[in-house]
Image (spheres, helix red, strand yellow):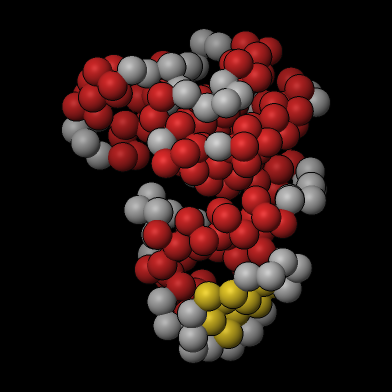
Amino acid sequence: MQMACEERAEFAELLAGLSPAQWEQPSLCAQWRVRDVVAHVLSYDELDRWELLRRFVKGGLLVNRVNAIGVAEYARRSPEQLTELMRACIPPRGFTSMFDGMVALVDGMIHQQDIRRPLGIARAIDPQRLQAVLNYALRAPATRGAWRARGLRLAATDVDWAHGSGPAVSGPGEALLMAMAARPDALNQLAGPGKQLLARRISR
């Protein structure tokens, strides 16, 4: 939970520094602008269990549709309101607080990079936080990291983390995380004989 709070605090700091134009820029998430990604990240914090159930039923239990409903419900909130809500959701609440905050940590780190990468805003992620997210991304159903990494040896070059056996794929830990989360943008930072197989799995 402490790591999730730290991640959200850094996310809020990022948002506070964005220009109006940057809020409207495309993110790495297909068809979502920066503001849509932020709305998605926060759209579960204010739901109680019944509201969460209502949203899933409304979305036909299809994750992409459920996420789209959440983004639409926050469409009228301004960048300033979304930034303040991010600050108000430290620590995370509701669904995102599950598993001792791990849901918020993983979701927040991946989506923060979905914003930072296309905007060209780099950051240094705390190594322990990054290692924790890399480990959880392997078994998180929404990420499907284990499926993309099967039969491969993933090895970070900047933090003490590696997983699996087989043809190697190496690079920065953040790039490995984003590749496991099916972001092709990360592939140009990776190398090794297993890279092409990983790229094919991302494209599916």
